[in-house]
Image 1 (spheres, rainbow, N blue to C red):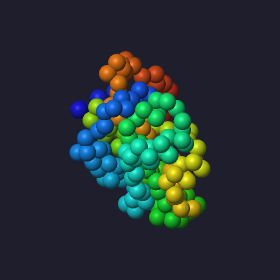
Image 2 (image 1 turned 90 degrees about the horizontal axis):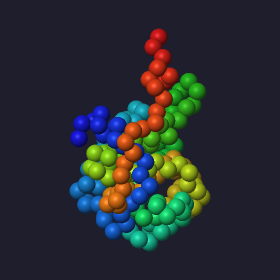
Image 3 (image 1 turned 180 degrees about the vertical axis):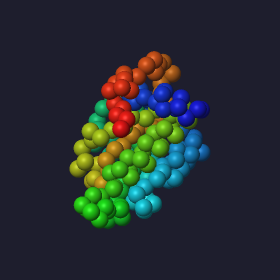
Image 4 (image 1 turned 60 degrees about the horizontal axis):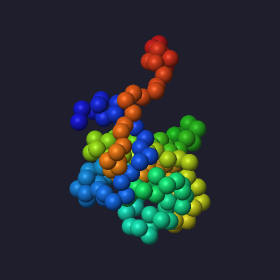
Length: 172
């Protein structure tokens, strides 16, 4: 698919076919898109977690108990470690959240390219997720996404609602 078409057509999907898992090769292509994402100083302070087993899905779904979220056959999680991320020497800014965001965005766009649905979720219960994933004190998750095929009767929106370019662009 043309890159600009991928960007234009990607939308948050809240309608998954629970009976249609994704082929392993497709999943690996999506994960590869995250693996090759840029990170500050190329430190790659991330680990990708693909949740597919019924038992683990149930534990993860508890952090965001929406029926449509629970229908997805897979959940993709990017976790990272603050100690492994680049720190700006001038003010101590830690790049972890930015690095994880870039990797997740690469995988979400790759999923769109593969004809799959995703939905960026930050409104999860971090304590439930932390417990389910057994995260260490230095590990964080900033976003998760369900991953799956849309149900047959699902239709995407025809146009995105975005501010016009002249409201978001400043040329100096």
